[in-house]
Image (cartoon, rainbow, N blue to C red):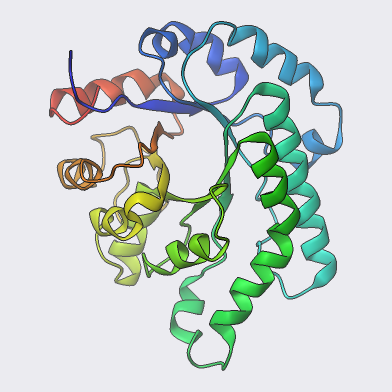
Length: 272
């Protein structure tokens, strides 16, 4: 039996039907992207959840969702905005409870501008952590109750360590770190951040989730794996040292290339 890590993928419920056999074959991890939008979460999403449960009947892989993120950050200074964000996160966790989801992706509050100004404005580092706690307090409690993990994904993060410290500040098993390889590669190529494998080393065993996408270091491409310039051998060598068993999720725009992306990783001997 191969000891190489097994990769899964992110997709909508419609695309789940097309990839069901591939997912079931090796109990691959799955991330559903059908519960991101506010109009879905504010409406009756139960038919979507029912359909997902039916399609996943007998599935042995881990399941989660990409949580809502459009139009906000988790560390807003505005208390009214924080209240909306808190509600969105709780709505996403309601979905997780309904479908048996055990992870939900949320976005990092750290920006490129912030990297250059965190120490320019006294107390800014502490404020971001405090605002994030105020926003996420109820969500973290709810996640603990339903055995779900909120994984904080790098977006503009130039410092691979700062988001790890934020996750650790909650002192909860329900908060972990996510790495998006394309986002890290963008930060490396365009803002002077370290390469992608450094993000993996920085996260260590706090790492719970990885979005695998290829890119060119300039934009958030979400290309099939092997099409860009991410150093996949270095990334997976770093992942081999992590003992937290993170979910490895192919997240690309062209879902028809998910299986080809997994086959590319197999062809270079790093995953299956």
